Figure 1 (cartoon, rainbow, N blue to C red):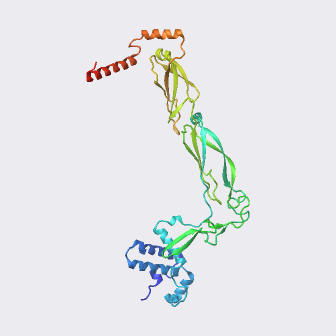
Figure 2 (tube, one colour; figure 1 turned 90 degrees about the vertical axis):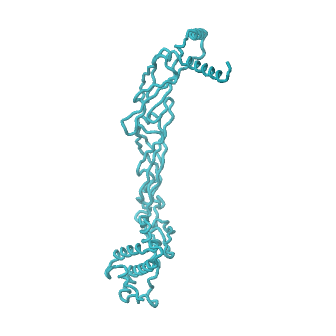
Figure 3 (cartoon, rainbow, N blue to C red; figure 1 turned 180 degrees about the vertical axis):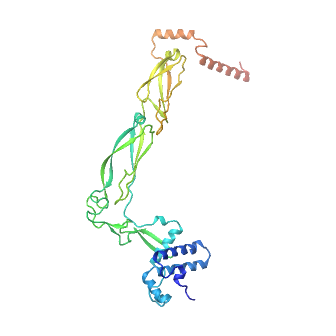
Length: 379
């Protein structure tokens, strides 16, 4: 059975260039790939013919022999034959990448590696979180070696392309229709070899230096806020892009305020006289000024007073939280004899109107036991 002309198989003219050949091959190979046509023996045969045609026509020497002698050029041991060698494996790998969406992962190795991201933990006070600040951060960081400009090679020299992998950084081995890849053992996957390393950085392209950076902490940051400084992480290997620096903020516990989002809370003890008769007291606000709080007569322990817009600023907005002051009525201790006498006299003069909550509570207790007795038949 006569073989089909290779040019006709690929649908190209005899003057087609490498780009046209490869484009035609990819289109047909994807169309007739056995994985896309399961159970179709005709497609499998067509797929093999297309591969055979492309392997011959993409090789200048094989193509010249084919143009002169046709298919006879590869019969009776003449030439190396089309077969499925390493060249075909490389071409088929291209199609495999296209079929399974892996084309974007391929590419020549450049030896460049992005630097790692760095983390720095910083503790600030609540006041600093309120006002914001510019902090100075000192940290040892790998930076680009100035002597070799990050190439890793001695001054006046350059890294050369790895001859073992051709600069790919990977070695491919064909096994049937599949191609296995492994990292090049000579260049370590970088695609380049440094024959004369820079003595300052030993070929790494970077050295460790202590740097001082300014960090702008905006007003209103909360505990756990992360600030990113782009490009301030580790320098890349052999000219690769630098990583980022992340500042993680934690806020110290405050001796007076407790924070809840943008609101602040505090507890203030007051005397029972102030709670009973009314009065006022001053409490510090987070910005440093004193704020007056009025206590109405008969204030109970635990009551909260809201001071509007005296809390924390909301990050990147014009809003401000509130401040809540909770009063705690303090029971007097270490009373003198006279003080005890006055309190005892006050207790004798007290009525249901002066202590309505206590009277109401014990009244409910009495009603509870009365109803319990009536259900059980006891008195």
